Image (tube, rainbow, N blue to C red; front, side, top):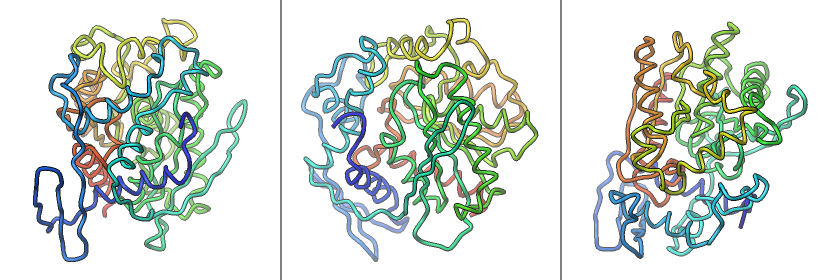
Length: 378
């Protein structure tokens, strides 16, 4: 299983994320050596504890067992390092989503049916078209709040399908339409094409919300990694172009600056699934020249951040981009933006969509969903 994941498996993963994230507040937890059983008045869920096979890696001595198991599975595929490949070949490598899917299968984790309907839509953008995947809650009549979601992948790899679990989980937990944006990738499409595509998609949602059973006055943006950078830029562009600014933005371990000598870049230079060499490779593939890496659209810490919407920032401890998120939070606060942030210990980059197997991902998704529901007055 490579770049394009089988649709039925994607549905299973996203369903697992939602199921693992939505236990009742009144539930009781019983822990044994191998399983955790959560019970409430309506259901019982048995989640098998995911355990690693080896010692914690040298680059992540504080890694938690479930996260380590995902990384071990990812490394077991034997793919060549991303930074040693062409972009086309790197897109064929296994993804963290593949690792989670295999762990779900191997541990016989039960997955419920999805709580959303999905549809695809191609929209015109400058110089071409991009694809949107639209998730609509099955429960409720709408018009629903709407979240425009931007996937990760360093502006170079991955796609809507790889990040299906995050988008579907948010739609189910928030009770919102989620529009996941398939912006064009580098090096075929250099800076600032991904940024411009992302804003074009946001504009399309504002203008066409009624056609997708959504309320354009109740809109938020969410992004992971490179997508976190894109989501923040959409808010900036909306402010500057004097159109509807998102009510809230959730930035999950966002790319926020170009200095690769920060504390987390040094500490986690060799981490997985993201490391310093990969970030240098991503940057070189996206920018037209290295000077562009300091452009405020990439180095958000140098941007004018005044007037941006309330922002939630999620960071992972074992992540070269940990300092990026922390620095951006500080810069946003200094610009007068309301910021709420949480750093999750023991986990790596890409953990957010892994709630089926990683407890911290379950917590982070619930946190993000709660922040969005508050923004929507839910």
